[in-house]
Image (cartoon, rainbow, N blue to C red; front, top):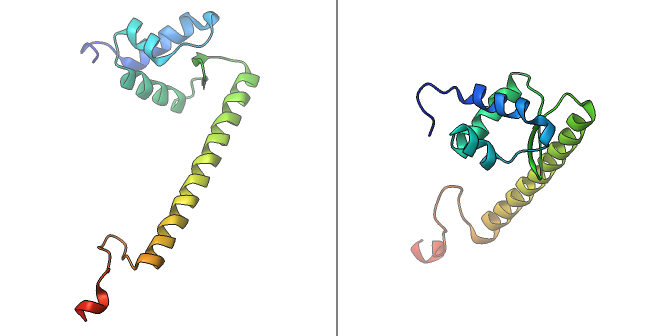
Length: 119
């Protein structure tokens, strides 16, 4: 947890811009040096990206960059992940629908296993 007078966004941005020449940095490393929690680092990075800071992420961590090619690499990875997530959503929806049909389960309800016995 941060000290009350530390702005997480400013601390993360300062760290990433000051040490950009060292390559990507893990959220754990950023948290340890800045005194933030890893969750606060994630939130700050999200907010910084939303405000236009060129922060990319990869397997090795986060990097502040002005290189359009690095931004393209990050965008391609994010789009790939989004496609995988969309595929998983579709698969789970199909599984749910199959279960609803085969087990006579009403959405948000109980299985009607003994529907004929009660009638």
